[in-house]
Each structure stands twice: as structure tokens, then as C-alpha cells.
Length: 81
Image 1 (cartoon, helix red, strand yellow):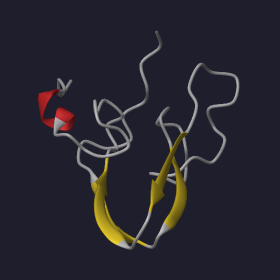
Image 2: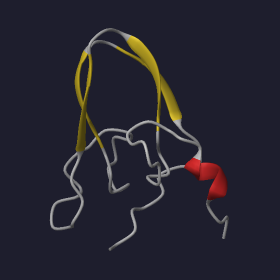
Image 3: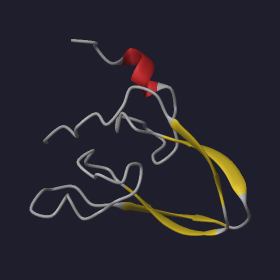
Image 4: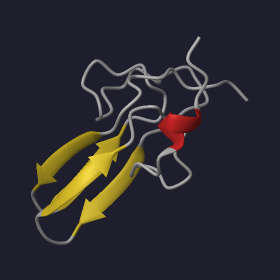
């Protein structure tokens, strides 16, 4: 499996309104943390998530979270080459 591009090594903390969102899983989007279609032609697909009420969230930008789209601290375990 191809590895996603690491967009950043820390999460993006946002106050989001209720609604549907599409999180970028490939790391190629120019509109991080959201999908802009850059995954086309790859094995990656956006991850839809829905908030039932306004909420503060920490969205993963390293693309290695086991709880995507939310940050689980995986960025702290990445090698910093």
C-alpha cells in the first residue's frame, strides 16, 4: 500500500459547525485538512465525517492516525528524516 504524504507533523485544531466534511486521506490536497480531489488516480479516498453539533476538533495532518480523521498522536511516532 502506498503511504500518504505527510501534510504536517501536528494536528489542525478547528471549531467546526454541524454538518458533513470530507477529510483528505492522501495528504496531497492543497486545502488541508479537507479533500480537494487530489487523490484521483490513487488508491486513496476522502473520509466523510459528520458533526451533529458545533465542536472543536483536532484533525490529523500526518495522515497516520488510527482514528482518522481525528488526531490520535501518531505524528509523535513518525521518523523525522
